Every structure is written in structure tokens, then in C-alpha cells.
Image: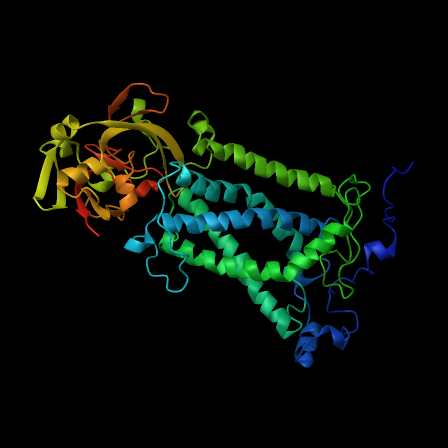
Length: 478
């Protein structure tokens, strides 16, 4: 007995399964009359001539035969991406703003007219950068299965023959190149950055920034063109019409292009799974990625963080947390503490020097703060040290406009950083000397890899700007 539910056309119905299968060796441009001129824009002879050429195999209707493809399925994946991708885009640009472009230290520094609106990066809430960058990387990873499924669902359109039938479609194709090429570039380089793999041979930050703008242009254009199609397709595929079919009941969606240039297969093969199973598989893949990624930010689950770099020792005790740049890589040796003195400048008295004993003798402040990096990992630690505003006062600049922090590291890309005035004056901004677990356990001196003798820790600041091995701070007036 047929299940109760919306009527479904029999699989043998030619209105559902579409037109007769092309003969071997023939594709959408072979074995039939050229499409009516109304299907082509100016110059018609050019597009019609392309249609008469032998069809390369990837462009043949016989290549893409899954009965699952159609506007409704594509629109389901498209809706998920329409919700998720803007979050990834916005949080990515927020990360660029967090790097302090007003000081020329965002990468790339010179972006011309493609500069997001200026923003003084706040220090509250302290977990702001942890949230924005965690969303950028984490959500980006979770959406990878959806992106791949979406590309699979539209592959017949990507290989339609002729590839272009009008100048308007040519422009749409160019936008698709920006969309598909942009998102694949961003995904591949982003995942390689998570692994600290820079074998692509160019600067990641610069390429990722410009790649984001290329993708954004394609994404906005695509949404403007396809949003009405998405809405109509979702309305037509009412709940129960396509989602509740079993594999045996699965039939192709109605043809979406009479000329055979659509998503629905013109010669569909027998289904091996239902649309519900496909959507469930994609959702399960995203859930698995989420489980294997959450450990990048939740310390007890860190062993599950499959995408985190392997083979790294982070230290022991309170110092057992992520190290992006080791002391060895920075050229900092074990004897860095011998004769160490922090140099403060900017005040009327000139240079003020404080050795580590003098720093430890100053009023100490303790704060529980997260530290998060552009690769998406984060952790929460208890930090203890001297408030930056107390150091500013000691230098004779109690209300600095900004502060220039220099590391003892000489050549690193983030060995120098300028902090905003609000970041210097925040009561939890520290020159940290000691670190402990977030639960208030015993504290220890910073390890060499984590910045001994002293490092900066500022609420909501990107991890690489929490300078390690601090050698000097220049407090600057307005």
C-alpha cells in the first residue's frame, strides 16, 4: 500500500524522469536541434555555434545522473550557507580590525578603499576576540561539509553546455568563479593556517584578506541573483514532499530547465539513498567536525581537537597551554632573565628601568582572562603581574594615548605592537609575570615559551599582540 502523504509521480512518468536519454557519445548539444533562439542572448550565432560543438564528457548530460539533485535540495544547502557564511565573513573582518589598522599593524596594512569602518577595539567583554575568532574558524570548519554538498548539488550547472548563452550569463559565470574559487581558496588556506602549514609560498594574512573580498563580491552577486529562486524552491518543496521519501520512494524533482541545462538529471540513475539520508549525512559530518574542533577552545576536550597541530609540547603545570611561537624560534635563550630590565619611556623623567625583582615588588594584580589566536584556539588562564596603567604612571604618563611595546625578539612579525589607550588603561591589562589555571590553582612563573621574564596580557586582544619577552614599553601622549 502506498504511504499516506502528498502525491508523488511514479518513477516511470516521463514528466518526472525527464527526456529520453541521449545516445552514447551525445550530450546536451548533440543529437537534437539547436535550442530556440529565444534561449540565447546577443550575439546568438556565437552561442548557437558553441552549442553545436561536440560536448566534452564533463559537460554531457550522461555524466551527472543522480536523481537527488534539484532546486529544492540545492536551496536547503543554500539556506544553511546563507545563514552561516555572513557570520564567518563578518567575524573575519572583525579580526582584521582587532589588529589595530589605525597603527598600520593589521595585515595587509594598505587596503585602500576596501577598509572596513574604523573601530577602536574594545577590551570588554574580555572574551570578545575569543568569541569572534572562534566563530570564524569553528563555524567555517563546520560549514565545510555543507559547502561541499552544495557544490555537488550544482555541479551540472557548473558544467552546462554551452557554458554561456548570453552576456548576462557570462557575468553570472564570472561571479560564480569569484564565489566558488574564492570560497575554496579561503577554506584551503585557512585550514593550512590552522596546521601552521605555509607551503603555499605566500603571506597567509594578505592572501586571506584579499581572497575574502573576492569571495564576498561573488557571494553578494550570487545571493542577489538566486535568492528569489531559493525562496520559490523552498516553498514548492513543502515538508513531506521531498524530505520524507525513502530511497525506494525517491524520484527526481520536476525538470527545472526545459532545454536540459538544469540541476535535475535528464537521464537519472536509480537512487541509492534518499534526500533525507543525504541531508542527514551532511549534518552528521558537520556535527563530527564540531566535536573534533571544540577541544581547541575547551581545555578538557583538547585531546579531541583533531585539526590542531600534533607533536607539540606545551609545557607543564600552569604553563601547559598552546604555544604558537617558541622561545627557540624567537631566538630567546634560557639566560634571558639574567640582567633583565624592563625599559619604560615617554615621561618627562626620561628612561625608567625596572628589573624583575622591582616589577615583582610593585602592586600585583590577578585577573582571569582568555587568550585566543587567529588560528581559532583559545584558553582561559589566571594571570598575575603589574597593571599596565601602573607602569604608565611609573613612566610619568598616567593617561597615555597609546603604548608601543617591543619584545626582546628581534625579527619576529609580531615582535612590536602598539596598544590603544583603552587597552593600556583597562584595570585587567597586565605585564604578566606568573600564570595559573583558570580554576584558581597554584601559580608559577611564566615559562620561557610563554614569555618569561614578562609578557603583555590584555582583555580581548588577539593572542599575537599579547607580546612575549617584553623588553620595553614607550607610553605615548596624544
